Length: 352
Image 1 (tube, helix red, strand yellow):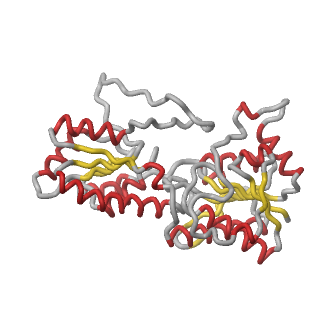
Image 2 (cartoon, one colour):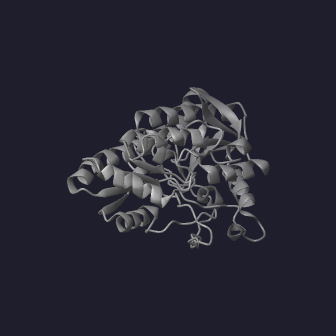
Image 3 (cartoon, one colour):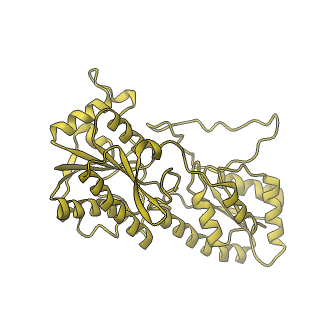
């Protein structure tokens, strides 16, 4: 059997560990042949491939990023219809012409949503969940999340000392467009004084009260905010329009002056205290994965190739407790996994 592999969406630590496990397990246990598709769905859409064998995956376990490259190409977008053929049809044709019997798609909501469409069109696909935000349904955790949390926690630890030295408030903006898992975990682990997440619009007056209360001690406040967090809107108050530029999947490209800087400006204006913003951004995506992410990614890769061998197409491997199970791709992409109120309430105990 010839198996194709692609990595789509934003890169995150652990992708290479999945690729390595897929190839090593597939060759050792099933004598499969592999072909890598470059840059996410662009690879099968345009027939852009690379050699993917045991030699190609040696030494990549601790490496961040992905040796296959990634992109946010969306084959189902109308711009990818050429000569009357949709992008999905073009992908199927290219897979057939390359002799690819099955495809393993490693990615998040968008990548796996495309995998589901290909499966519904007759393609043989198995999914591996990947999202640094940990917001993908049907799996308890995704690889890359633990690494991002640890990077953010270390940054918060370092910022505590400079905040205290200069008696200023520091706002740390972390990833999390729709879900605040990174902010919640990193903020709790780093001892933040306030954590703001997209799931719960915040009251800027309350945030400033927390900041001023912290300044009454000998310590300085640290506010951790997810990039998608937004303030409560009062009746009649205008809401800023975020919908400037969008990617191929319709997601807004967030601007450089994000919520972190807006918070710093507003806190400084309202409290009279100096405030600075640190945006961690892509730093959270880069570098070597943690041990947890390496192990989880490796287990996902091994179980994904077992699913291919069993003909369990249209499924995704997922972590339930400590077990790796198979769930339908449709379940995986049905809804985002958001931070529940009871989890956020645990963190609120330590605000101020």
